[in-house]
Structure formats: C-alpha cells, structure tokens
Image 1: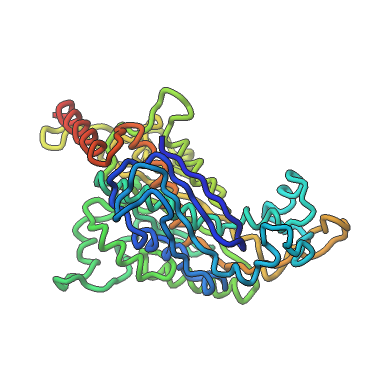
Image 2: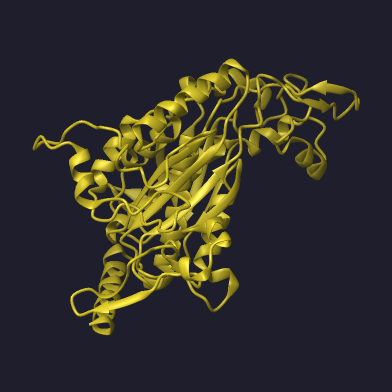
Length: 428
C-alpha cells in the first residue's frame, strides 16, 4: 500500500514527508523533485515569501545511489525563514509564546474553526499548519509518484484556464497558443501543436486534451508563461487582472486543468464507493488549500445538456480496436479509467489573506477588528496547478500499485506489460 504523511509548520525549521510502499529500484534524484518544487514557487502574482524560500529537498532515507530501496523514503525541505522565527516557533520550553500572538481570526481561513476545535487561544497554532506552505511537502511526495508513473509511460501536464475574469476562450486554445523557443531542429512548438489539434478547452461538448501533441513542447510553452497558461492573449489578460488586484489590495482565484496521458483502462474500481478513482481524485484535489470545486470531463456543463450530448459513443475497428470519438467523460466511467486521457479541473477561490483586510472579531476580547495580515500572494492559481498535478499523480500511482503491485519496479513493469498483452488479446 502506497501512502505518505507530511509534517511541519509554515515558520518551523522544516517540512518533512515520509513515503511508504514504493517499490525498490525506482530511479529518483533530488534534482528531479526540486524541478517540481521550483515550479510550485513560480507564477505571476506570488508574494514576498517566494523571494525568501528557494525550496530544495533532501533525501534522508530510502534512496541510495539514485534508486529507491523499497524502504520508507524520508523527504526534508528546510524553511529558510526559520532563523527569523526560531524564538517564537521553537519546539522547546524556551519558545517566546508571548510574541507574534494572533487573536484576530481571518475570514476564509481555518483560524476560527481551528482555534475552537483544538482549544487554542493563539491562532498562530492553527495558521502555521493550515498554511498552503504545507503543499511544498505534497509536491515533493507527488513528484516521487510522478516518477513512478513515468516508468509506465504515463504523463501528466497541467495548465491554467482562468484567473479572475480572464479565461481561455473555449475551442480557441491552439490558435492562441503562446510561442516557445524552437527545438534543436529549428521547429517551434506551435508547429508541433498543429500536428495534433485540440478537441476543445474547458466546459465544451468535447474536452479531449491535446491528442497527438508533443507534450514536451507544451511544457516548454508553459514554462515560458508567467501564469502557466497556453493561450498567449489570455495569459496577458491574466497578468493585467493580477496587477489590478494588487493595486487594490485584493486577491484573485481561478481554474486549472490537469491532463493525464497513457493511462490504461481498468484503474480504480466500481465495486465499492471508496475505490472509485473519480472520488479519490476529487477528494485529493479538494484537499488543496482554497480549492472549492472539482469537475471531471464535461463536469458541471453536462448537467445542462441532454444525455445524447454527454455520453461518449463506443466504436470498433480492426485497426484501432475499441475507441471513442469524444471524451466527455474525461477518461473515467464508473470510477474506472477507460483508456482515454484523464481530464480534471479545479476551481480555486481568491486567497483570503488580503492587504485590504476584512472585518473580524477578536477571539479573546470579542471586540470587532480588521483581520491581521500575514505575508500573502495576490494570486496562487499557477502554483495550485502544480500542486494539483502532484496530488493527481499520487492517486494514480496508488491505483497503479493496487492494480499491478510488485516489490521492485522491474516486477511492477512486468505485471503491467502482461496486463497490456491481456488487453491486446481482448481488443483484437
């Protein structure tokens, strides 16, 4: 069973994660994880802490010579701001508990609910753990899962569809694709995109990702975008929205999409509610701080359409086997992958920490006040997209290990290959 736990406070000495259940022999380096951590810290609209923290993971256990051992993997991410907080956050009895006390709960945070639940009179004991800083550890753990999926030929890519009122036009993603540096052969990524074509964007009649497109090229485009958006004109509008919100002391939310390619049919299960993969994915995405909605495939759009425009008809040919001409289900039917690309979307609310504070009531005195301001971002949707990729990767890795098992990566890949051979026999 693949599982992990994280620990650590926002201004504590470090964030940690322990992963149990990884097969032995998986190639894994700190640099690989650090690439994803750097992506999480990027994105237009981030706050001052991103200039302080430059997250780097250290493997403390479970990896030797660049390969997993089969034992628990321990990950460690230092908080570089710790020196400024050591007196206040020290775990020992010498901690200055009378310093930097927070008694004014901020609307939209876990502050008040958490203080009431755990009996804290200093809300710092809540916000330090409830903070989205914790997602750095989840991105690290999800990166390990992503590395496992790559061994099976499964690829994940995420992109931002909306920030505030700036939204990618439906069906116009390819035409508005942002340029990226040409490859070694001198052919730009836009050319590669034209070879595949996008069936649509979000919420239309046929979400299908980017069939036939070189995902490496798409990643180049996303890496060059300050908001991780593939649509050039919309990305510029998104940055203007963020600038306006910053000037007003406000914040913005948005929507991101995660696409997964190379998934075989049969991951997940319909036989019990808690084994349905769509439920597990939705739960993982909803667990990300500030995420308030998740949809798969057509999602909420399908509720307004007749069934004939929602379900994906099944076809067969000797050349292709079973196939669909649409992917409105987003790659999942009955809680089980159906072999089509997985398409999931998440909606993020505006960050509730504002430089234009909202009204609140003091926890101790009960007097009205304006909520205290911790260092904050104006918009973290691009960063949330990276976290979304990580939690999706984790749930898919869990499903793959449930299906294919194995104490070593070689054994798991052999089991996977036998399953693919079985599918070939059934299909053809």
